[in-house]
Length: 156
Image 1: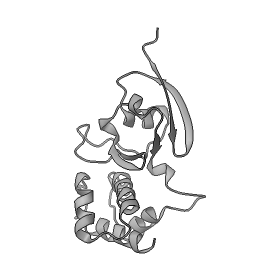
Image 2 (image 1 turned 120 degrees about the vertical axis):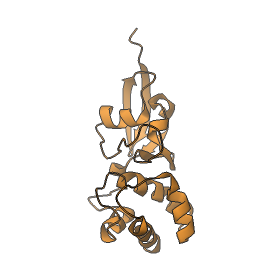
Image 3 (image 1 turned 180 degrees about the horizontal axis):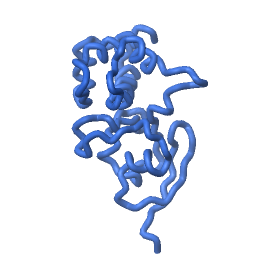
Image 4 (image 1 turned 45 degrees about the vertical axis):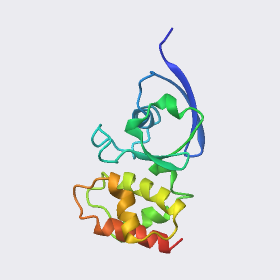
């Protein structure tokens, strides 16, 4: 017996199958098994949000979930947002508004904002700031991040 558990899920629209240790974190599965390194590990404590992905359309911190918990579910990572070589409107808005500096936290902010805009297509600045409260950026003052999310909302 290998001690591994078979998992099958959809990641960025593709069905993936693997055998994983029972205690493997979803973030480690995404990065190490699938090679999708846009999902970042920032703190290992769930405080920074750099590892945020969409789990059945809801933003979750993938360092707080086991890979086996994602069996049968749909996961979307930052790599899954662009379509046919075109950036997702949030990716483009972050670029247009300089909503990043070092970029380490950016995928988590974008994934969190995707969920927000899917639920509320025209959020107020207060709603945006509340929603991104679980994501930390150590480089910016969040002003351009908020501007980027507002631009993406207006362009929907």
